[in-house]
Amino acid sequence: SSEEDEKKKKALVERIDAKLANANTKHTDRFTQVLNNLQTILDKMSEDTDKTEGQAAIDAAKLAVENQAAKTYTITISTENSLRSDVGAVTSQFRLDLMATHKLVIDAKQAVQALRTDAQMKKEATSSANL
Image (cartoon, rainbow, N blue to C red; front, side, top):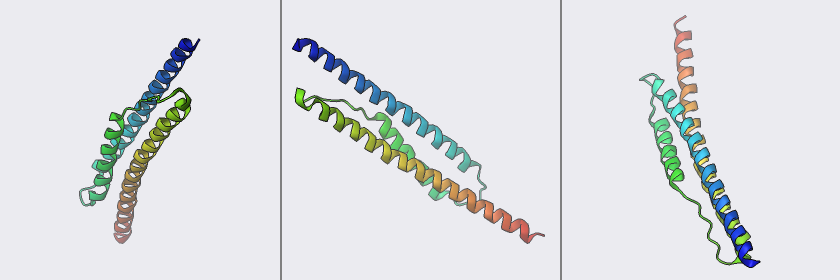
């Protein structure tokens, strides 16, 4: 019956909504963990290292992750015929948002790695000059 079909579709959409929410939480939790690790690395760097860029990159990524974590992806079905495209549009938006957030986390990681490399090169230059 069409009432049964409606119930099945509603249940399916609710499962997809829950799946997106769980995936969002899983990814944003992981991003937060990575950023916390980067912050620890940055904090341990010597005082004579200019950490401004690294800190700015971490702060931008943290803000993006917080915003992403707060987002909800709710599928609204306009008509029965558009069910697939409605689900697709929301899922696609979720992926795009997640990719944009992930890019900022990668940028932060690269900024901190660049500082580590720079600090390591200075250290090596200093120790070789002291020979």
